[in-house]
Length: 530
Image (cartoon, rainbow, N blue to C red):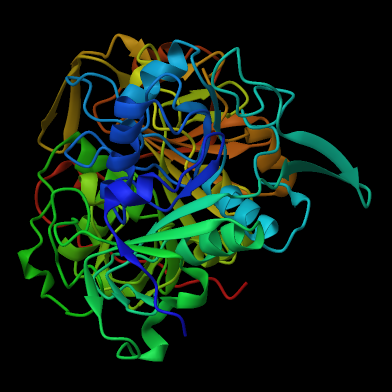
């Protein structure tokens, strides 16, 4: 095999031509080829080239904590168009990411598309298929009858509605790739790439295939170089026949703020005794009640936000081993992490490529999806992608639409209201002194990330868990089935929603154990034979 040149990040930047389609493998800080992206941005700042790039990011590339990712490219003139499953966003106390500023100023075209679909678009480009025909995104903001995934007024239509075989589908055209920038851990002299220190292989192979099929080039950023032929064949994730150039960055982080943790890569198993319990409070109450929706032996997808606390609840209750977590970045099993390490798991049993994981998630072959929400409206549409009033911290749809398209049981977790609130927990009861001033049960959500209408048509089970009540989606509408002890149903629930909520004739009080600091004594129900 021909030996592949090892070049500097600055030399790699010279290989990106004006007008190129650049595909970047990353998930926020996880697997981000930041050295190469930084070099491309620096070359443009110094020489005005490359210009007019289109970038593809199946998941967000970079964040606001040291790994800048796409923000290196967020310069007027450098970017023309970006298609991403999600966008980097830091705390609201920080300046918004540069990419958000470009989008909001309408200086570039920008799309927010489902992450799983973007991975499939790469596979279609690699095999020279015209595009992806799928039900993922129907009746959500990705549907062109709503927003078409367009993030500003200068962005043209891209997604189409098609009729095929008597059914309605969304069609996402494939985009040929000119340059793929991927990341691994080790490259041998022949360009074979292994990922032994990575939290996930993400979509590196599919992105490399998409570039090679189009006559493009593949640049692989890695931590170290090995002798030709010395890497175990079973560990090679991207073969050298697909790689054109190798960039060595010995200082690349495994993920945001983590240099290297072998337990995230599956090469070491750490005791979970070092995982700190979630602090008792309203967030934990919500996560505890959501955990009660799980069954023994269930395969469960986990989203960002309050729902990410559920594994800690199970661990405290001694029930962690009774479910298997699956994360869109690729981890199966193990203990999912929270915060900016979200997307990694401690002690995973397997780590799939993200594209393969999304095939599993889109199939609906798992039992439950545990997700969070920002708003819910009268049609039971959920917004989980656009934060009301603060667009610069919008992260986007990510894998949300892929996961919810065919999930059998969805559990949405979140607070009933937003903003400053005064809710105390006293002797197993809630005492609401001052409620949040921002309603979350609204007439119309700001952005439809999940379609209640589609869920009813598909026969999906939908549960919404808040600190003061539990609701279920029924044909007659969102229905209150449980209310927290100490909460007045009419004053604190029904009158705080912007639309009429139904009330179950079998309304019950939420389990008082949820509102006490000690363990619940949680018992998961046996999994249904069906």
